[in-house]
Length: 248
Ligand code: PEP
Image 1 (cartoon, rainbow, N blue to C red):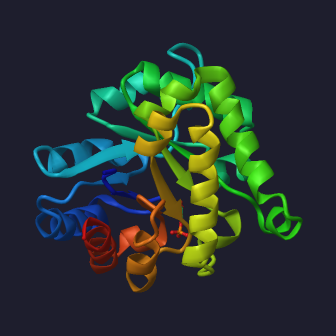
Image 2 (image 1 turned 120 degrees about the vertical axis):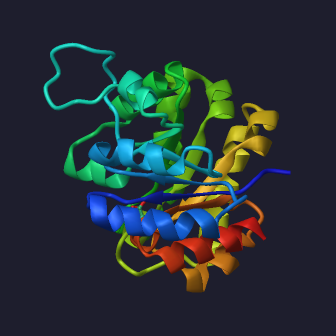
Image 3 (image 1 turned 90 degrees about the vertical axis):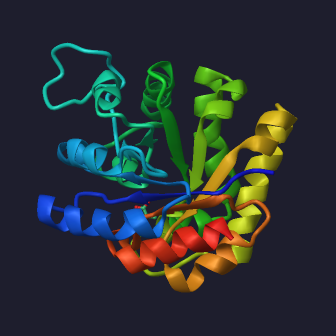
């Protein structure tokens, strides 16, 4: 049986004060439930201090593919490890579209994360025009293939994949449970053709306007193993309800 994992992606939101209130609310409410929050770099020390010893892990939203050196503004995997990170999001659609991250760069970040003992949460997903053009599976396959070519299919035994249709991120438009399940099943089938064991065990999260009101239906799908949650992860009651729906 795969476990389910819900991870919050705080994006570029929060402050020391706001975070303290959010963490104080979610920590006791999620006691015993495995979850994670991926926070802006400056707040890693705060979440480490707050969440150490709890059932909530933490991570970052991006990382450099370089180990160290003259890369102004970048943050390395070792630095994330220094702050106790377990996860790092790689290939979020905002990084791909706003910062020009290619499939190959995402694969290098994924490999750097794993080499440092971090678990990458690899985001894949199609844009609205790609969905309307009928190339959803081709796009998701291409994004996965870049990682498989670089790191091998076995590497997915130590990774999480998040299927995030770009048209559903931050838009309030959630994929229907059936639409999401169809792509999740495609991902698992595709990987099973290469390594059935890895495919069976892989956590595939859904992301895109998940909220308390739609979480249970999404989480009930056989190939949806949790969620990557943006906006709703900033609202304590919403995030708690989503994590509880996944844990049921
Ligand atoms: C995300 O940022 O990964 C995301 C899914 O955002 P939202 O839940 O706000 O759509």
